[in-house]
Length: 140
Image 1 (cartoon, one colour):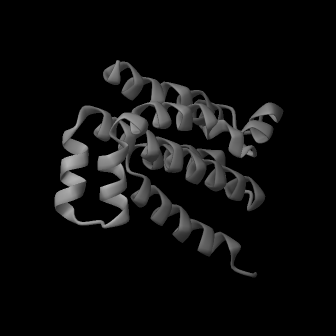
Image 2 (cartoon, rainbow, N blue to C red; image 1 turned 90 degrees about the horizontal axis):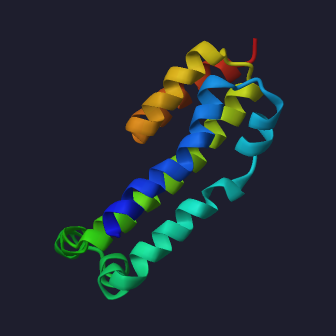
Image 3 (spheres, rainbow, N blue to C red; image 1 turned 90 degrees about the vertical axis):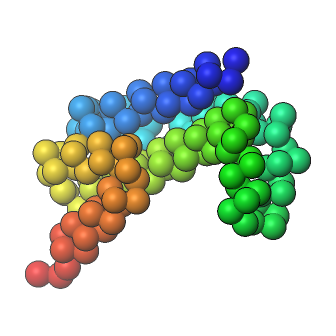
């Protein structure tokens, strides 16, 4: 079941990513990407994975150290919960980037690859986007 939930977390987020990358100008995309509710299904997966390992999760977050985090992620449900959390937060970051890109009229040809980079390596994608945003938002 853990493996299924691990896979499901990304599959639930993928349609939103696909819309933002391949249909950025389509009317429903803006409404969907503008809603924080898109992460709810992924968060339900997170809860399903996190509840069984809650004691280990609580230890890892209430008194964080590398050892307790390693113990959490050594558990299948623990690793799955961390993955689902990453998927949810990455999606929220991607949605914000999409909305900012549209607001600043950044080309979809640039935003598409930036969103793909964010799916794969969100800190890198966010850093590059913040640089592009900074240049684009400068007053003329």
